[in-house]
Length: 198
Image (cartoon, rainbow, N blue to C red):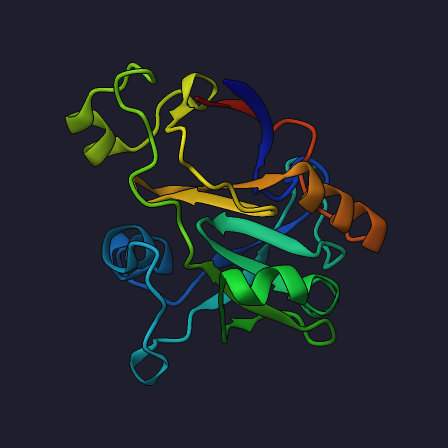
């Protein structure tokens, strides 16, 4: 049994702006609702993909600019800057799908990204003290109590679970790549968690 340190993949909205989707009339039409309730970690059919549009939202401290390289307001649908994609493409491309988006940014380019490689049925329900019905309805409640089955093969960089369609985690190795690349706006301060592999 060993403990694995992970981080929830999030933007640091305390200090950095983010994108908010604008082209939907109800929550049911939003990209957030679609990825969680319809896609379930499956890639999109680009022929039928309704391109989401995003405008700039202020940081928690009131800042409003395009200095960030990640936006997670529609997590698990992420937005990465062109620079982030260029520097992390060897990680992102094999583990998910890049998708077109429209943003309010005139100079800096961004693209959508959706992970498509979850761990399938690898959560030990009993050891994690999770009610199966609750898990199917609401997802993982307390990630720090999560226990994975002994034969779970964790990815080196990005980890998500078939049992929870909303949460995406990254490893220390991913964090190192982001920091070495000098990318901005990733939250590795408030998102640290631990899971247990039996």
